[in-house]
Amino acid sequence: MNIYLTFDYELYFGERTGTAKNCILHPTQLLKEVADKHGIKLVQFVDVGYIIKLEEFKSSFPELEEDYQSITNQIKQLYQEGHDIQLHIHPHWEDSYYRDGKWHIVADRYKLADFATHEIDRIVTTYKQKLESYIAVNSIFAFRAGGWCIQPFDKFKDSFIKNNITVDSSVFRKGKYSSQQYSYDFSNAPDLSRWTFNNDPCKSEEGPFTEIPISSIKNSPLFYWKLFLLGRLNPYEHKPLGDGIPIAAPGMRKKLLTQFTQNTVSVDGYNAALLSKALKQYKGKNELVIIGHPKSLTRFGLKALDRFIEDNKSKHNFTTFQKERKKL
Image 1 (cartoon, rainbow, N blue to C red):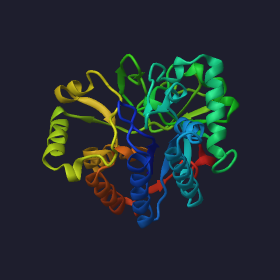
Image 2: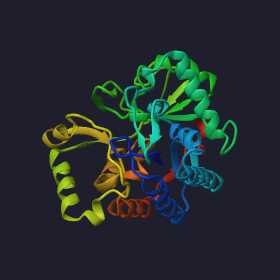
Image 3: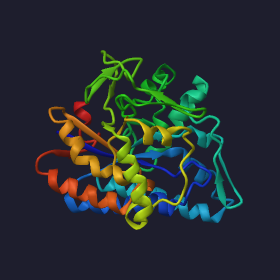
Image 4: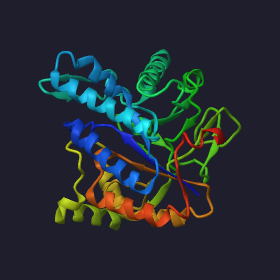
């Protein structure tokens, strides 16, 4: 089985975004050390809008100059060492700004689909070119939507074709959520670990795109009660390394604590305890795509990931989209 360890390289988007050091740089370095220990490579979906904003404001705010240099240097280092750098877009950066020593997140247009088609084309083209300016031209071909908001895909299709983006990894089977700011509905996604599509990433059919979905797992409310309890009893092990606050997701916590839910297979926090269970559930399939966020990494999660790789690196192929590109 191919196992992809994928990470959304980004800040928090709530009232407090957190710092580049604690949300991105330090936890990514810890992840890289684990990967180096086992001789495997990671996939980093880089939130390019943040980098563009750093570049825009760094001449006025010296502290952002340091963040800009540190972030871009880490991306270059990751790429030079063989890690996979791909495109992640949170378009609300178009409206957000830096003032009084902090980022002010304006999330009225959180989904890429909130923008007009010509604006989407500009964003996708500009962001892809900006990311490739730090690594290599024509190296970006895979995409993950911010907040998993890949729908309606027909608004993105032409721009993706124009920019040679042929792989998406935003869908997770049976995932569904809707709020004022963001929404996704993967209820009808096929029970496959890979498929081609044309206009709808949840419909398997002949088309120019390949969906490699994030793997998903069904969790009970008890799992999340335990998660929240451990966070209070042992914050050293279970508190995220990032120092920000997530964007609001009204009703999500109540849902998690009161009913069975389908969620991503993840290394974030206590979710990492389910990695081996997820691998067993995906037995017989060709891919297991694990998601994580450096900002949400915990000491517990890092240790669990280390053990998971150690237990499975001789049995399975830890790989990246770049390594598998010719097969996609």
